[in-house]
Amino acid sequence: MGTGKGPARVLITSAAALACAAASPSLPSLRDARWLQTPDLLADLTKQPSECRSHFSDQNRERSIEIGRIAFSDPLLLGGQAARAGLSCSACHSNGRTNVHFHFPGLSGAPGTADVTSSIMSSHRGDGIFNPKAIPDLAGDPAKLKVSRDVTRADLANFIHGLITQEFDGAEPPKTVLDGVVAYVRSLTPSSCRGPATTPITLFGFLDDVEKAVLLARDEFADGDEPTGRVLLGAARSTLGRIDERFEVPEGVDARRVLREASDELGQIERAETVTSASFDDWNRKWPGRVRLLRLSEPRSLFSEAMLRRELRAN
Image 1 (cartoon, rainbow, N blue to C red):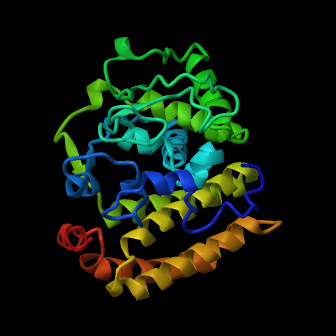
Image 2: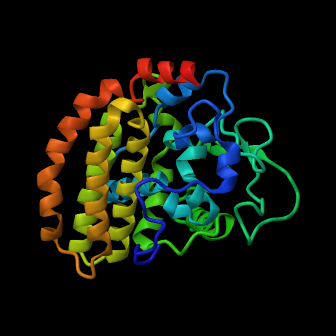
Image 3: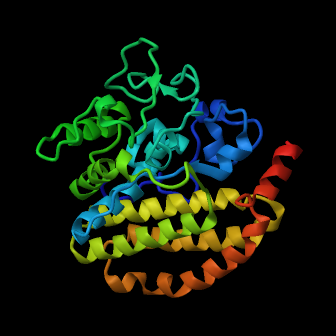
């Protein structure tokens, strides 16, 4: 994770050959469709489980949770084969919950299962036995979760650290990022599951994640935590890549140009030897105009249910 200067930090994460084998035959350009075995692909690409996240008055705690939530959806956090395939924590735990239709060849048995001791993803924990288990809902009944979330114990931090560095062969995460992921997982509780069971997947939500990641990155650089700042910029670029996939239609040429420009500029900041708050000024100045163009183009993208239905029928 370190400096973030490697070739893995690109707008659209290149899929490994294994991910290509997992790809949906309907919409292979969407990474979210690559590992789905579902009776209703349209529904799975337009809706997700509602997030059951607790909120707190302590701003530092909220900040840590937000850093963790952003890293949770970044494939680069896991590294290795997962990063090359574009697979993040949220692929299995959609919106911090579960993905009942997740299916990855070699990892999954029935949909919604994964073998966490597979050598496909890990050189440390592969046991040579195919034993996929049901993916848990992280906001489910605490009594059914195997790892304690007691804030006085290090169980959850140790588990998540092992998951990143051993289960997925990822690099050592910055302490602030690891603490954030732990804080995010702890914030997911059954008591916070109020309202509808699902929430729409929207361009607005993706753009909001980009803005938050960039803002947090700027502040982390200002505080002297460059490793966390670079992780957050990588996460912002990964989210821009997910948006780009939704504009991979003839009507999306201008939107994709804007997205690539935005990602390239963040990449320049990420790779810079010295990053200050002023490094973000030009990007911040251009971003509102880019958002306006993207929002105007949204009805002609794969964020639109009608456009998705058209593409599914055509493939």
